[in-house]
Amino acid sequence: MYAIKPQEVPIYDSAQRRSALVEEFLALVRYRDLLVQLISRNIKTRYKRSVLGILWTMLNPLLMMLVLTAVFSRLFRFSTTYYAVYALAGIILWNFFAQTTMQAMSELLWGGSLLHRIYVPRAIFAVTALGTGLINLLLSLIPLLVIMLITGVPMTPSLVFLPVPIILVAMFALGLGLFLSTISVYFADVMEMFQILVSIWMYLTPIMYPKEVIPEQYRWLFNLNPMYHLLELFRAPIWIGWLSGPKTVLAGTVAAVVTLVFGWWFFTRKTDEFSYRV
Image 1 (cartoon, rainbow, N blue to C red):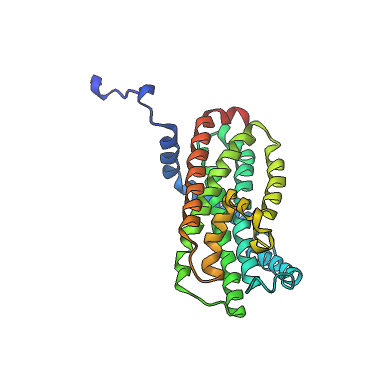
Image 2 (cartoon, rainbow, N blue to C red; image 1 turned 30 degrees about the horizontal axis):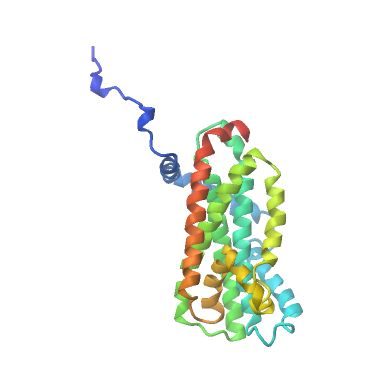
């Protein structure tokens, strides 16, 4: 009869457990096929039975841009050239940020029942929201390119820089989404409160208006808004054809990295409790 040698017996030592931050990331890598399936499900479900289907992703910011251009272009005609491109670029980026953070919360709350049945990485819900948002963002860039061609905005080499601000905004949205998801597990009202907050936040960010319309003594307040720096990084190569200054790059990078690290740390500290609360 075969005897199991002592050295062949698997030993689990909780003291040697990896950091929760690392374990959650490695689990996401192992469950990457499930992640792809969840993102695909979100895209298909959103446009199921829709006449225009995925075209709504492109039409939504385009229609909003047309309204803003009709209303505000006369007000800002002296200070904002190519206002349609200015507004559309801001709307596209803001929609990506707002929808990703909101969906990160709803994915965890509505998909939490899965945690009672099988093991899945808890962060997969927020990353699914991010993946879905990135696909919608890339589709929204198509009408932006069309408007740039129609209005005659110069196509400059600075457009090659666009992946950098997109990645930074994705990091910021994921970090904030993880943080808010954790709190929403304990307090369901967080989602409704954030909907109000994000609406106010939008108007405090120069998306539909240029910052020059704000009195100069108050413009320093924009520096306290991380989305202002990230928006400038994204919009400058598109709208005016050059890169933002090093201070804006630094501020946007710090905001994205710090938010992601903090959000990931805060989220992974509480993951073991989620199955008891969602």
